[in-house]
Each structure stands twice: as structure tokens, then as C-alpha cells.
Image 1: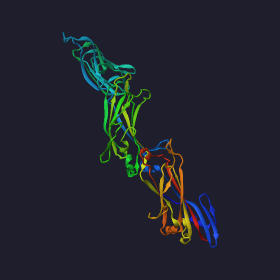
Image 2: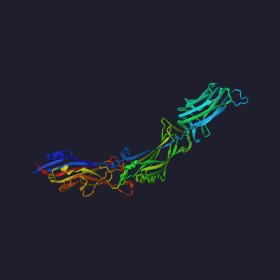
Image 3: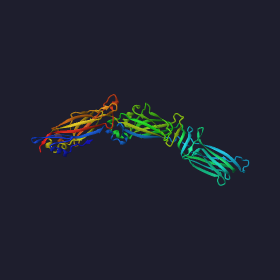
Image 4: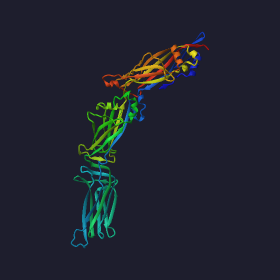
Length: 544
């Protein structure tokens, strides 16, 4: 970081020729002494400011957030959904039935009357342990074609009493005569309600064919019946014990790519991995996440996450509650250093991806008094959230900031006059909200970055900010100050070597000890450091 000085050349030159000037930041005093004018000038020349959170600034902003308390996090999300469309599946069906209209065969050429009823069962449930109590259809087609022998007269009725339209069961009636003896129906089931009849391992529709024929021609009535695209919008019943899995889910941690350059200086003290599962399905589920394996980009295994000594976690998800709107069920688990003995080691290895298996099991306790239901939302929505609380351990972490110190800009272009300056005093004021002591080294460099001389004989300690033990927060910055005297000989050296900048290096080491929690700093957004640099010049210049 480079911060320009606050003392432009023309402004300083004007100060030298004025008899005196004073404002909030700059103080000038001149006194005549024979042919020379005594000069004393004090003014700010620059400042540095940074936050302890700056090391995160290279991470893509989508990963960084600050909570209401000002705590800084890196956060990463990944969705993992489990599709349960097979939980409730109404079977498609197609069958052709033949019904004899006159089984009296004593006089085969004799036309006679016939009245009869034929009943068929169409099973809807795709599994024997699934019971459909009612279904409101989103789409579906009921189709049939009925034919009777040519020459037969009378009436034929077909009903499906378990399917309702506007509260009335489906019912069709056809008059049979010489010109009408084949009939077809294509019924759109969207919006209709189905209340199946129940049998052993079966939720079924009844297809009832009633014939009342006055003039029967020898032969059969033929009914070609089908159900297709049977997709309910809302279903009630009991949906059995079923399993759905998503194996070897693979998630990339892009957030770590931006941290690899800091791996020698930054260690995360903690990580929490939260798995949340949300469901709008009125069915309870057991959800198991296992084999959480972390890998480097080259495929090397970093480690398998342990949670309470196991390589899996179990979650129980309650059934959603039927209301308007449906009240989703939510369950979650957080994995951190409190329940995992290797999560910190894994995250400090900067893995590139994690692979895991997710399995869900419906109605783990079997059928209860609570009825199952499922609407169009047939997905268990899983979210894997990785939070990196910005604790860090800085082992020898340091940074360098520069302040403009162009000796000609500050003291003027006339070197003969400048070399008459007796001494310069630099004043350093530091304000720290960082809760560790900071070691400061300061030196002068030329325009090419070459070191000219140290300004400090030894490292100075900038006192740490005081942590509030209840909040972990530094309420007020701690002020540290010191000054550095620059002699006339040093001024000449700076002139000769074209001094351009002052470098301020700040380094901080968190304490190390038996308690690892004391080694880490919790980062807040305003945990900052500020340094202010001012100058005082004493000397004499020729009187004008």
C-alpha cells in the first residue's frame, strides 16, 4: 500500500517565504537572526490504514459476508436435492375385456334380451405397501372404446365410481342401434379427484359396464380401457418404506483457490459444515450422509470427516404439515470442532472438493395415525453450507506500507538551503483495534526500493487493543506513539541518495501456548490499524 504525502511542493515553498502561517495541521514559526531566518515547521505528511480482514479481500465477494455483530466469514453453499417422484406413482394401465352378451346357446340364431353387469378392478398403486386414499390429478387420460355386435339394440352404461368431476362420479351412457354400436371416450383427468377403493395390497378403480339390451346378436361386447400419464397434483395415503439415494456427490470448494497463496501465514481455527434438509412432502424421512471424503485437485485423499467418532451423520426429518400454504419440515446438523476431531486439520489442508453419499428412507417408523401426503413438490432440498469463521493464526504474518518521503518535495529544491536544516523529528501515532501486540520496523528507501537507512534502532511494539472478554470485541483503539530524530548528517544522506519513501513494516504473532484457542484471533470487520506520520523541522534559511 502506498499513501501520498500531504505536503505539495508549491505549498511548502510558499510557507518558507511567508512570515508565518497557522492552521489545524501545519504550524510555522520564523524569527530573523542576522542574515538568516530561523525556521520551525510542524505538519502531517501521511498515514496508513488497514484492516486485519484485508487478507480476505482477494476472495470473490460472493463468498464473504459480515454478520450483524460485524464478524467476518467466508461462506460457501451447494445444493444437493433428492428426487422423490417415485414415492407416489399411479400406474398407467391398458387392458381389453370381452363380455358375452348372451350365454344361452340353445338356439344360436335366436335374438333375445340381455341384462348384465361386468366389473373390473384397475390397480393404481405401483407398490404393494403403498396405499392411495385420495388423489387430485394434475394430468392424466382415461380412454376407452366399447363395441357391441352389429345389430344389437338397447343401452350400455360405463361408470368409474372412484373418479369424481365436480363431486359426481364418472358415468357414461350409450344408446345402441344399427348405426351406433361402437363408442369412444377420451377423458382428461386434470382437476379431477380420485378416491380409490381398497383391497389387499391394492388401491384400485372400478370399471363397471352395465348392459340392458333388447335385441342381442350373438357375440361379445369388447371394452378397450386405458389410463395414461397419471400424475397427481396432491395425493393422500400411506406411501410405504422406500429408499432414495444420491451417491458420490462431488462439490468443488472454489473458496479455497483464493486462499492458497496465504497458506503459509493463515490457519483457520474453526470451520462449521452445516447440512440442512427441507421438505414439502408430508412424509417423515431418515436422512443419512456418509463417506464425507475431502480431496486435493490431484485426487489425493485429504481425509474422511469424523463426526462423533463415525464417518456418517443421521438426520430425522419430520413430515411437512398440510395447510395453505404447506408448512415445510426442516432439519439440520452442524459439524464443527466440537463434534469432529479432524475437521480443522482437513480445512487447513485446503481441499479442493468433497465427495459424499446421501440416502433417505421414508416412513422409518412405519404407518402412524398421521396420513402421508405429497403434492407437486416431490424433492428433498438439501443444502450443504460451509462457514469459515475468520479466526486466524498468523505465524510471522507481516505487511509493508509506504508513506511518501521525497526529501526535495518536503524541504525544497535548493540543496544548499536544505543542508542547513539542523534536524528533523518524525512523530508516529498508531491506533490499533487488533488484539495482539504489533512489532514495527521503519526504514527509508529510494525510488527503486533500495534501503537507505533504518529509522529505528530496534523494533518498536505497538500495544494491542483491549478485548472485551464478554463480546470478544475491541471496543476502542489503543494509542501508541513514538518519535524519531533525524540528524543533519542523515538529512544529507537522504538528499544524496534521493530518499523517496518511508516503509513501515508491521508484524504480529499470536501467542502460542498449551491452549490452542488463545492462538487465534476472531476477525471483526472494523478490527483495523491506523498509523499517522507527522514531521517537525528545525533550522535556518537565508533571509529574503
